[in-house]
Length: 372
Image (cartoon, rainbow, N blue to C red; front, side, top):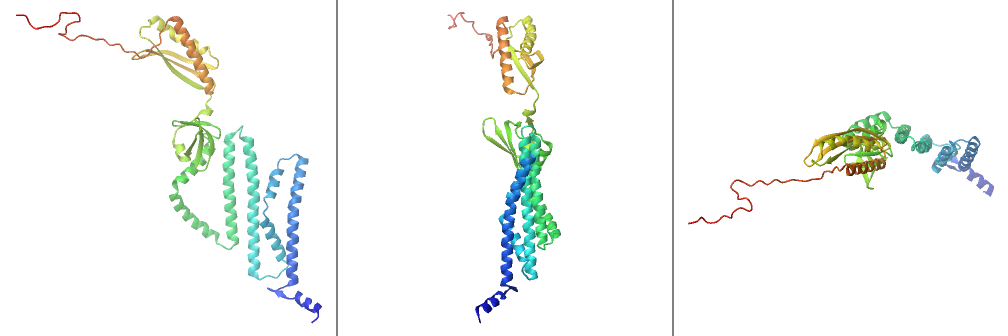
């Protein structure tokens, strides 16, 4: 047989029902489609970037990032599917290849949507964090829930495409879910507490809150735990359910600060001076800016002092401002007391000793034996 005849017989040689020419054509189609898809990805990114610059739009980075998330395996699956169209494949093989292509489309589509969602959520959180931290926290959590829903739908569609009865699977998962819920009550309690905090917003990121004896700034609100940065520097971690069981004081939302303090004078202070002390205290408070005087009264007779109670408001939640004002008030009161010769009380005790009946007073005749 001459070489040409051998070459012709080789070309018509079949592998799995397809000649070498068909296999070569399929490989060529797959290669061309793969190169075309890669070039299309690069060209689209460049065109979108140029269009966004011309229109001054901010959506381009999100779209370009989504295009960049296109996986190489996805382009390869599309190329193989395109090349397979040049072949005559058995029905089962063609069905499996079609199913794999659809699953690849579903997964890649979910990756595109997730990338866009993450980009949009991050951009919105950065924009709102300084002005509306509550909505920033809500958007972050909604983005996370959106991703869970997205991948759940993709998983169900993929399983349905593989011929699995999704309805029966969902019913089975529902029964199993009840068992899991009973076994993971604490985890689910923290999860629902997290959702309650997101919706009700008792505090948001950046708020300073007091929980029991602890005070800290909210740094992270997670699915299971909330983390605070304590005033002393350490990180405080609370389970969300345990946190909501406590009484929480949100110090950042304080509009003004109520101040109550007591001052005591000695018992030998004359009544006229005692009557002059409440007006003196009022003057000391009202002399300070950003204060609102409430009351000053002779409160009670204590063990070692005559106590006066003073109540006023600082018209700002700033703690340092409050301390500056209280210091100025204390100094003004002290100066006025020195001027009026009023003594501040301090713990003292006076002991009165009375001799018992039959005791000889000091300096009396000494006892001795009776005379003869």
